[in-house]
Amino acid sequence: MPADHYRAVTSPAELRQKIERSEFLGIALPVTHEQDFFAALDDISKRHFDATHHCWAFRLFENARSRSSDAGEPSGTAGKPILSAIEGADLYDTAIIVVRWYGGIKLGTGGLSRAYRDTAAKTLERAPVVERYVYARYSVTVPFDSLGVIYRVLDPPNVVLRSESFADVNVFEIDVRLSLRDSFEEKLREHRLVFAAK
Image (tube, rainbow, N blue to C red; front, side, top):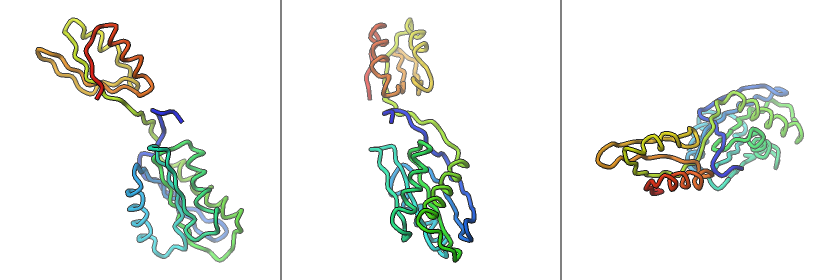
């Protein structure tokens, strides 16, 4: 996993399907903290209180943390397949809850695993995804005769201007991808620009 770049779901998406008379509802959610996920899970569990199971998985970018739950289904048949769909789509800061209403026909462990993974994967296909970058912020002091230099080093989404203020001292706030910090600092030193990382 790159240290400063990842893909994430940006807004909720849902998919409902029937498999062997059981109904499955996949709900994909953007999450960045565990407590936010568990609040959403609680809300969905209350909304679909009549369901047989509320199985889930999430994968967070921070500390590459992931968790899953079979929520009463046989061990390994729900949570892990849902997590595997998130990993297969190469997503972070993403959660999926698959709500199941049992329809009277047993699917067996293999059938259950496929049903949960398939529902999760199809739900993710409906979810909008964004590329996210992790930045370090720099404050750069730029004399008027060097303003052209600072504009030339900008390279969104790698090097992004966040703010600029012009006065006796011109100060630019710039976000730089973590993996590009050394080369960015080197360019500033070449042009004798004063900077501080925040």
